Length: 101
Image (tube, rainbow, N blue to C red; front, side, top):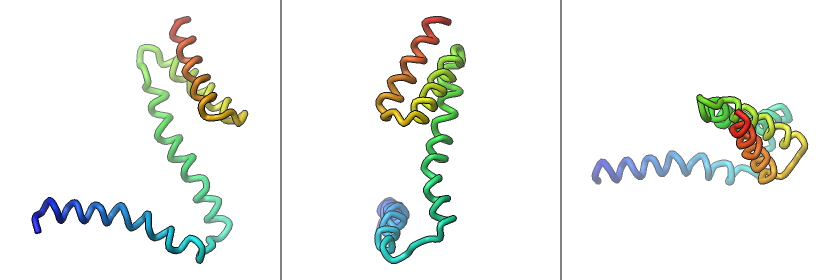
């Protein structure tokens, strides 16, 4: 077996195992309430960790546009606006700030 094939098979297994195991045990295991709360917060924390640096460093010359877009998106999310509306409002805020400054 070539090294390339072994690497591909190993990487495939490394990505498939974490996806398959929860599906196999999802109905049988019920984690405690604290663990469930923690796991429910992970996607939001990961999303924030991915988005915040982009908001801050979107355009160094016009950092206010990124900040305005981020704030508008947060407010729209808190108001439970659909994701499309929140995104469109954030883009609109960034454009307005860029036009004004």
